[in-house]
Image 1 (cartoon, one colour):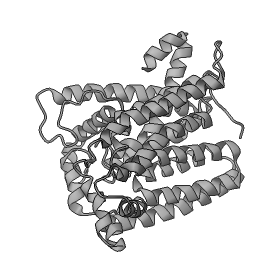
Image 2: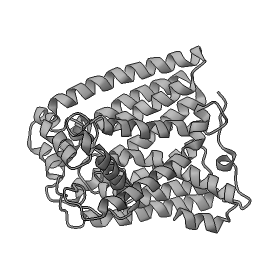
Image 3: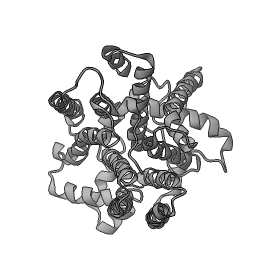
Image 4: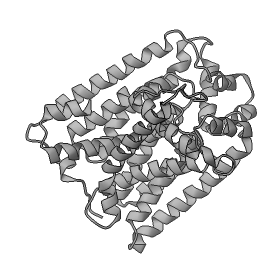
Length: 388
């Protein structure tokens, strides 16, 4: 399968952009990302629900794993770290902070793997560095900043499998996908979406489909085992809390809540990623002011239109027309995560759990902005203003 990237992404502009200049800007973004994250650990305090993951350091190994049914791998690493670091010190935040800052560099790697030019890569890096939710989760004891890094790594591996078609790349994706879901089950939709995209792209070629189907089957079996274990150890009251907080769809007992839940999930996600106003108590909007849902509905509609338009190159490719095959995996991950929320498995719009979607949405948005720039013949400065 030949490499394919939209010409407006892969080609350079009339104004050259040196590699040295790009490196300086990326380094500045990393420093900026570190600076805006450091105030979150200034008082050495915990967020309102960080006391629970901190307790893994005060119980045995078996209890620590049982207390973390959705992220047992991360809980084990964090337990060791909390044991060897002084209590009440900022050092206990070192793991999430390192992952949050490292995610900025991985975003550059993600853009490069997906064939983005220098300006597009910088735009993707800026999104990860400046996203309010990515900043906040970098100073929390939970695994969300690690989820962000692993989500980008999975997308990178999926794209490498698509481009190079080597058995080693397929095996690496199967191993990394299974292991990442041991770290956090929030990554399962991203992994499954990646395999789905690869299988869809390989249809019609039996020699290509067989190794992909084998890798997807092995990964799915491992994820089913992990999911079964997680459901056994997850308190039922926790799911009810997310349902009543309008972050998880329950089509069996509260189907009438589904429309408002979907609106609040999209509104909360847009609020967390881009800092747009969320006129409701967050993350549990139990009391909404008059007119709040209308504002949230407008935000959700605009978000759906923008993401839908940015997804058109991937949809064209799925229909057999020339498009952007590299965008199918990010889109599949987004749709799989949304389906998991609608089926009552993963709460979204909480200000943290949806962080795994940020890389995929970032790829679609940056690609869409690049297309818009070419179609509208924008100057570099105008495109930069639109991106900001």
